[in-house]
Amino acid sequence: MKPRPMKATIKDVAKLAGVSFKTVSRVINREPSVGEELQAKVWKAIEELNYQPNLSARQLRGTPSFIAFIYDNPNSHYVVEMQHGILEECKRQGFELLIHPVSSAEEDHIDEVKKLLSNGHIAGLVLTPPFSESAELIDVLNSRDMAHVRILSSDSSSEYEGPCVLIDDYNAAFDITRYLVGLGHRDIAFLGGHQERDSSSEQRLGGYLAALEEAGLSRQDELILSGEYSFDSGSERTTKLLGLDASPTAIFACNDEIAAGALFAARIQQVAVPQQLSIIGFEDSPFSRQSWPKLTTAHQPNSEIAAGAARILTENIRSSRQGKQSEKPAVLEFKPELVVRDSTCPA
Image 1: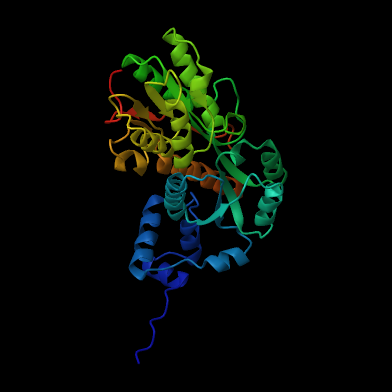
Image 2: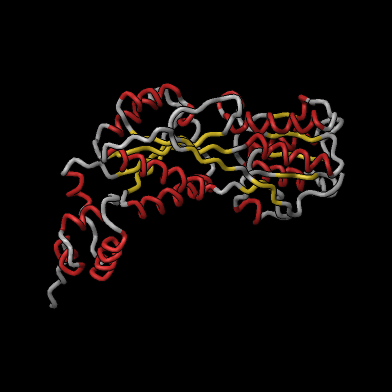
């Protein structure tokens, strides 16, 4: 039986790179004090030796090394894309990712987050709605000096404290509705989430109504239905809409799962899409490309959004450890862009 090969150590890396092991440690921890030439030597040696940093040792030294992704979202595609984006950035920055779903409907969800933070391994959190919108949770994190970044639906009337990534849902929804109006549609339904606890749905509703107003069209409350971000919810609400005396000629669904449910309900009711009913989704998930006809939608780059959030967070953590404080919190902005496919046509 052959002896198992010895795992490379930090000293092996230092020897091969011709630097001190402290320099190797600084490079692994992404400290900016090491010049680019030395960094390149160290990373080359790490690759040649297939060196794996000792995560448990870093934790024992009291340096938290996990980024926690906190979410409550039934959309599996959204969650997977967010995880992918955060994970890729964590790898680049030398952090580990902890994925932790929390039900915001539970009364003790704040206590659950507090318990997660108590283990001492968490360096920072990436927060998505509804947690990114929770003033109570943000107060808890600030009181503990816990680094965090929020992913939010932007509101031009609001000012945002701390680092965040803003999604321009309002103008994306305005563009979608204006596009449908331009096709000649006048009775356009809106299938959203719960406006009272979902700012993205609220902002999309605002953009939808603004585009109607611009076109001189009146709001029709019977065509505006809130619900869940799910296939079943989209199907149920579309069935209700198609039962109206004056049913809509177009549907703007707040995500692609709702839109796919709307498409299914139309098919059951033998309503031709797009000839009799145009349907638009939001997000550009696999639902939009795998349905028939393929869904017109708004492309939201979730992986890119998540990676940007993780980059802001890890840079803030590193700066804080070095005693540096940025004058102005970092903010990234994204606007979902219309993607025209086969599920829409002139009225």
